Image (tube, rainbow, N blue to C red; front, side, top):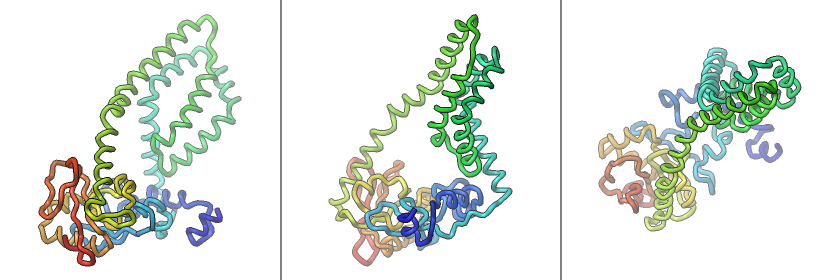
Length: 320
């Protein structure tokens, strides 16, 4: 707490609650610069050009993307203010997310458990009550998430504990044991059929190509005069720019992914203005990691393996 407070410049036990309530319940920052769900809940930095919109990203030595490395340091204006309408809206969103999880991947286990409980509900409730010390922390933490922001990955550990208590509290009469075994096996089989195809698709199709592309971009940087410790501009989302982290460069200017189409459809003069604005923010080059079939613009150089394009900037001029 002492180290955190020293970094922030005021006494604090943590800024997560303040920021998340301001972003997701009050919603003032999220809705201020993007329609719908923003990839970033607050401005990543001052806008230095309105069209195409260019953000100047705060610089923190040794950090790839400073705003998301330490959001509390750069988003000091967001304040958690109780908002009844926003609170009701966010609870509704969180409950739908929780229900989708239970009715989706966990539905097979839920139906199976209900069938088993049906034979002896009082014994089940009595055993659950005896395990209150396991269920109370789950209810408390999930309740806190429901108030502010709930996504499935927050629930994985709690789900394991919940199902452990839930299933171990079931009492099955001896005469029903064969039926109970079949019910459990059927539930597990349905659960596996629901989950395994998506898992197999993810393992088979996602990581290799993405990782290879990011590595190609990172390894190419020195060939274009970008060295570790330099600053770069970016067309895309700096929050997930693994190549920049591996190349040990900092993103100091950005046309965000939601504004990228505006950049590419802009006139040559407007694109040059955006590039100049990035150069004036300290960027040594502007990088676009390929996310489509668009060819490299004039004066931009292709990166190896068709992984993207780069525009080197002359020192101090911001021109390609």
